[in-house]
Length: 326
Image (tube, rainbow, N blue to C red; front, side, top):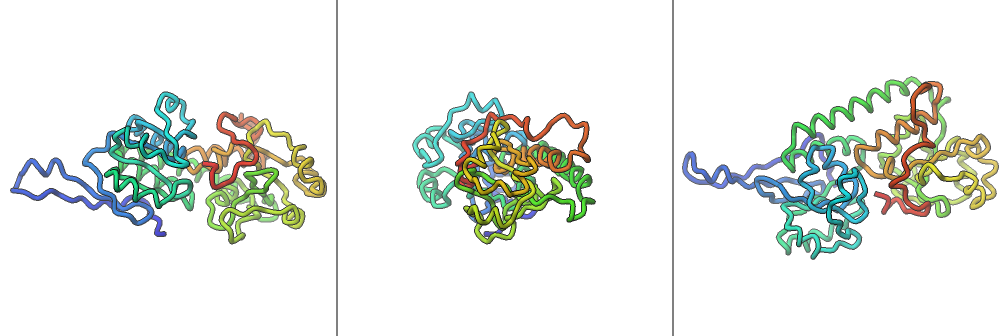
């Protein structure tokens, strides 16, 4: 799969006619999505259905929240989406989506099946797939959303603000030597140990927070870890995506042999809502800040938030798999 660089390839197709023909004002356009598919769009996209919660958040970040006419049933942020119709994305309720008469459907290969494009094509409903393999993909995804939905200026401002904030965070952690960077294990499940392998942007977030992600070299993109792996790797910190009310003692109940793991010995088990880390959207910066404050409180003293006080409104059950977390 070829990921975009910053920006979106726009191939404007002008409906030919005489010089100054009014038809040129009604030009259609084609765009290339992250699956390298060519997607034909109306000149102006006014009605959009989002099939992934992170794409809903990205649409709002791009200043295009008013273009959304329906979202996936698992969408819960930002608060205005509560008033929108919710449609099933796993599996897709094609009839419900088509009933919204969308100009464009938004999907991501992280949770939506690329094969569903055939059905949408049969329904004559354009669908655009995003892919998020890196933090830069999230930022450029905001810009792309603005280009798709006609809010380019607002999207560019939002992406630049997030980029600047991430750079500012990195400026506070880049000087931390490797020897003082805690070895961090990020877990989506606490019983079944779902985690993140090679190629995930989550490792970039951990690094920006001043840590080292211990699963970054695992070949499997969504590995299920064993107790033996955790005992062998001895993480200094465990970051769980279980919400701020999680009781770390549950880990010892589930994995009694972990009493020798430094993270548990030193009371360094932290937890945030999955949407702040595993949902590739604008709020990953917030999750990264929370992690940074917990890994290096000396560098972030006086800041109001801590990882244990993150909002839990979108926290999943502890057994959620990373393939469905967004």
